[in-house]
Image 1: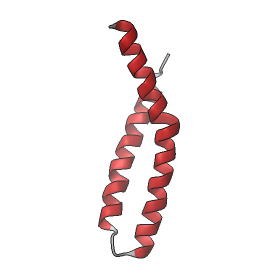
Image 2: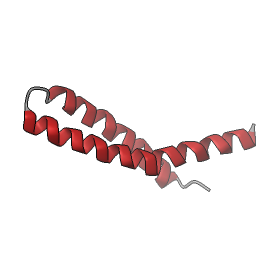
Image 3: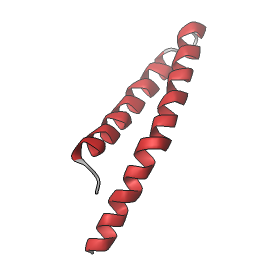
Image 4: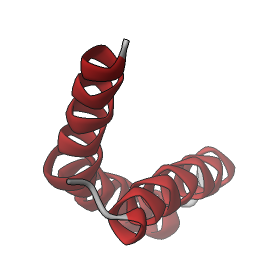
Length: 67
């Protein structure tokens, strides 16, 4: 069973990705900001792999079971 809190976490990570991507785009030409934002994006990628991907699989499997 997938908790509401876990689903909310996955959604928040997606929002974080969008915000970090925007910061990365704006930081082009500023090496310090660009490098740091790049590293933040890599960390968000790990959260996506560890949280968002499994949540998506569980949501899909629940939809298939009900359908």
